[in-house]
Length: 493
Image 1 (cartoon, helix red, strand yellow):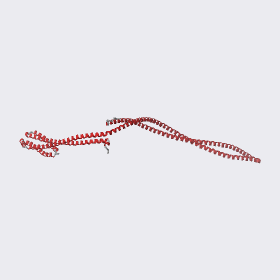
Image 2 (cartoon, helix red, strand yellow):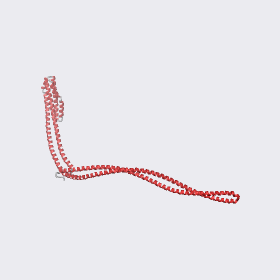
Image 3 (cartoon, rainbow, N blue to C red):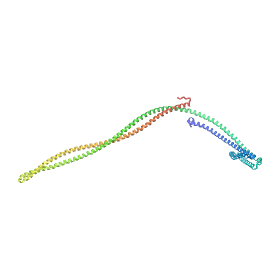
Image 4 (cartoon, helix red, strand yellow):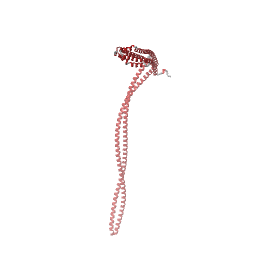
């Protein structure tokens, strides 16, 4: 179980004020109970006074009616009936109100049961006297009055009302005594409860203040020490916040310059991309031109191959013609030999052979001409063969040159294709660099905005640190003042 010394401040205050509130609640309840009794007694006192007033009003109405009727009987003047008329009209309402007021008291209800017939009888007597005075005159009305019937009835009414008043007087006396007793008890409860409450509050306050003085003093001392430490930390925080704000300002300036540089790089990358794209288009166009030239050289090479083939065919035909010329030359030589032999034979034949000799001579001449033509044709064929060989050699050399040129054009076309591919790659890289630079610029701009926000937050932190420092100083002063209030003998360090 937790002892009282270990209770928290809230529990101690709740206990003290709860006990005080319980004392006050007890006093208040007793005072309320007695005040309610006093009020109830006052209400019954008022009720008794109302009953007495109604009884008195009833008696006054009857007396006024009796006076008016007596005046009318004596004088015969109708104006004397005005009090009777004015008094007799509210009598039923007064009787009803009186009946309602005494309904809680059986004795008064019994008296009311006696009083009502008497009142009705008295009113009937008044009516009878008025009627007799009007119809029979003064003497007859005086005889009714002298008979004493009306006086007896009025005496009975007075006696009944007197008893009722006496009962209300008795009730008034009892209720007045009860009210006085309740008032005395209320005053006693208030005085005793007030004294007890004051003593309880004072004792509890003294006990709580004494029990809390040391505890609160120790806590306040700890708060003062913590305030001093917090003040040192707040000073460091303010200094750090100031340095951070300065650093953020420098970083913001650097990021602004970096943002400007990134935008310049993005613009340069865009120009490089455009130039690379134009170079790629030119490289593709050159590759197309080189390809067309390569096709032309390939066509020339095919034509040269055809020329070499034709020249070789021409050389072979020339050789065949040479072989034929050899045969023709051999035939011409044989023909020449035959012609010479024929001439010899013709000369041996004599006259008979002269004509044959002429033919043989012509044949020999023709053979000589054929032999000369054959030699000329052979020379021409040799020249042709030499030219063909030279042409074939030159054509083969040209074919080799064309092959080398074709290979070089192929290499050039391949180089142009590689250049076009490299330029395309460069263009893509330049575009990626442009996009990355733009993204970098956007990121740098966002970082710049974030740094601006951080710089603003650093400035606000610096301001907050100053306010914290001021609050800590105020807390230190307050803790010192509070400690001085709790322990007046203690002096602040």
